[in-house]
Length: 232
Image (tube, rainbow, N blue to C red):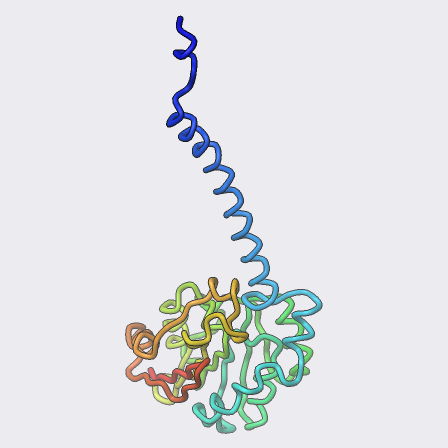
């Protein structure tokens, strides 16, 4: 047999190299994705750990978002408010100053514990999923959601749940979420931004309408945030 016949063609060598590299590259990408997911969960999507408890339990956590949401909801003493993704409970505590009653919902066990301490027994804080809220139909007259909407993988399911727990006559929602322009800024830095959902104004308004709400609009706009309000 000729010596040359034992040599592997260069094209085949390149093909074998790529075949060997593909599993390695795929593994590295999966490991990187897992690290990003863990980082996102720990710091924002499902906050937990000492730093998250300190950040979200601070008296001024997301305080720059409070007033537009409170103005949109116009809470009265006879209102029942549900704060979805309540975090450390500081916004809910502020909202209760209106005299309303309320409850908080979060899927982070750490945040539920912090929020219970924050409100001091003034209202119920429940651990649960926004897509399957552990509340009865028509239990609330208002629903708030600050920042958390950005992370919901199925916003339509969340909005349907919000509509279900709302009083059909008096109910209203106010959702403050991160605007597309904030991508890559301190408001939504990379790689966290890759795990969120950005909507332009028209898309955002369309979501509650598709979920069965009768009206929806953008009530407040910042370069980095959108306030969506809707009624059943």
